Length: 156
Image (cartoon, rainbow, N blue to C red):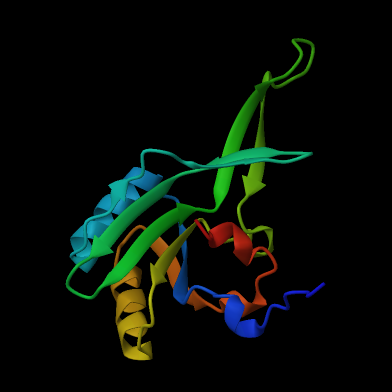
């Protein structure tokens, strides 16, 4: 009986660039400002990215844009899912909030911009500079995807 062996060429890893954004903006407002400043057109995905785990569940909003000019697919992904729970009446606060992170090792990042495709460094640098110019954005920077343990959550 012959066994089929898989080689490294049988596995395909998507090429993408990941940008982290720190902001207090809501997802729809950030998408609007990115559209305005980057001359792109993010639109809300019909379905959020849903996770069900042993401890926590999460729903992360996604906005997508397919660039015909550059041939890249863009995604704006929330890193934080907030779920409110009502506590017992005898407690001081009646509502508690549980936060779940898409990429737990990047808890300070509020949103990720994922650009699929092979990009040159100058394009990424220019994009980050434009994002930083948005007044409500605290900071923005490139993230090395190879250092992330949870990078599989970014494949969708």
